[in-house]
Image (cartoon, rainbow, N blue to C red; front, top):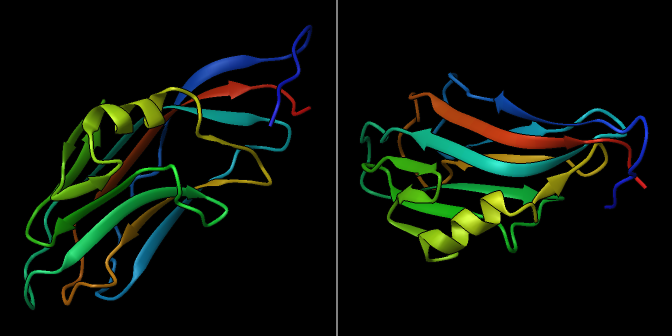
Length: 154
């Protein structure tokens, strides 16, 4: 992805709220698609994700959060927690049992340095994965992203 520059090209920052309140059933996933309008690129500048612990219903298993483009999560953020533990990511602070990359500074860099971009044809997906849990996730999943909006694609 490249950028046009010059007259008539708009740039700006915006915080987008994609929070979800519905139930994510045991064994299911929730995918939030971030798709800018045609001709606009979103450059990720910050990410906030939070979900409270699942009310236990069948033992401790993992639930996950990850962001991806085109179904690929390589070089992106992945967090894992037992279902009795909340997951939180904000400004490089992580509350999770494990994460990939493994250090908060690496994750903060990925979420803020501009390497994660999306456009109309290649949207960004934020995924909450409850496929290993025996309990429904009934708590709100808070998804906030700060994007730099950049004008037309090259």
